[in-house]
Image 1: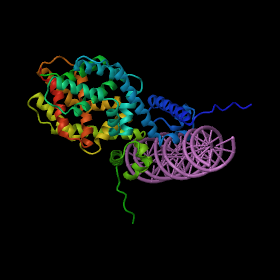
Image 2: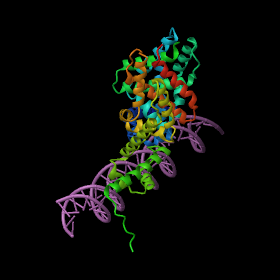
Image 3: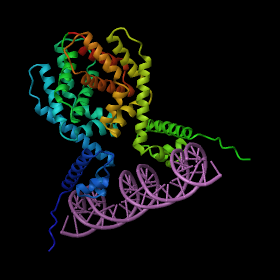
Image 4: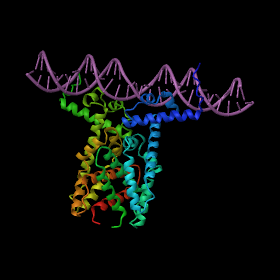
Length: 198
Length: 198
DNA sequence: CAAAAAACATACAATCTGCATGTATCTCTC
DNA sequence: GAGAGATACATGCAGATTGTATGTTTTTTG
C-alpha cells in the first residue's frame, strides 16, 4: 500500500519550505558568512532542492535579505518586550540601550545585521530596515529626552543615526569579548551628553 | 632588429606589477564591490595575468587587504596633513573631525573601509588597521580634552571606538548625499557632551 | 657562464550561480 | 468530479570564478 500522501494545501507547502530555507540559511549565514555559504549547502541543510530555493526567492541575495529582515524584526520585538512603560525619558533610553545590547548577544546577529547586511544589501537598504523595525524606540526616546530637557535643537534623525552607529559598534565589541559594562557606561555618557541640560 | 628588452631589476618588476594590481583592484573594488569583482577582470585592467596576481598575493582577499591598508594609510595621512598644530584640545578635535569627513569623501572610500572591509576582513582586522593608521589622532585628542577638562574618567579606548563608529556612519550618510553640515553639528555635540565639563 | 631563484604564463579541477526545461501536486471551474 | 491551468518543486546545463599545479622566461648568484 502506498503511504497516503498527506494532502497538503499550497500555502502550507510554501510556508513550510520557506521556513526550512530561512532556518537553514540563518544557521549557515551566521556560522560562516554570506560569502562562504553556497546555495547547495543551504538547500541540503533545509532538505529541499535548489529548484525550490529559486522558486521562492529571486536569488541568493533575496534569501539573505529575508533572513536579515526576520532577524531585525526579532531584535525589535525583544527590545519592545523588554521595555517597561518607563518613567522618565532618560530611564527609558537606558533601558532600551540595555535591551538592545542584550538582544544583539544572540549568536550571529552582529554578523548578520552589522557586517554582512550592510555589505551585501547596502547601507540604504539596512537604513530602511532599521527605520521600519528598530531605531524607532531610540528615536522617540531621544525626542522625548530632548524636549523634556529643552536642549538646543539638534536634528533628531541625525542624532539617532549616529548614536545607533555607536550602539552597533558596542554590540560588535561585546560580541568579540569586550566587557559590556564599560561600553554601557560610555553609551550612557554619550546619551547624557546630548540630552541632559548643561 | 629586436626592441631591446629594457633590462629591469627584479624589485622593479615586483613593484610595478604590484602597483598595477593595486590600482586596478582599487578601481574595480570601489566602482562595484569586492564580491562583484572577479580576478580575471582585475588582471585584465592591470595588464597582467592571474598567474602574476597569485604570485604576489596569497588570494583575492589578500589583495583586497593590501588595497584597504593602503587606503587607510592615505586617509590617515590626509588627516595628519590637514591638522594644524592646534591650539586647544577642543579645536584640535573639531579640526580632526572635519579632516576625516573630508578625507572620506574621496569616492569609494566608504565602501572600501566601512562596508566591504569589515565584512570581508572582519572587525578584528579592521580595528587593528584603524588602530595602526587612523583613530590615533582621535584617541589622543579625546585624552587631551578629557584631562584638560578634568571629567569623570571614561575608558578612553572605548570612547574612541564608539565615537569613531559615529564618524563612520556620518561619512556613509554624507557619501549617500546627506548634508554634511548637520552631521558635523551633531558630531561636535557628541564630543562636547563627553569632553566639556557639565 | 651555469645554476638557482624569482617572476610570470597557462592549463586544469572543483565549485558556484542563475536559468531553462521537465514533472508532480494543488486549485478552480464547468 | 474531471480536466485545464496554476503552483510548487526537481533536474540538467551553461557560464563564470577561484585556487593550484605545472610550465616558461627573466634575474640573480656563485
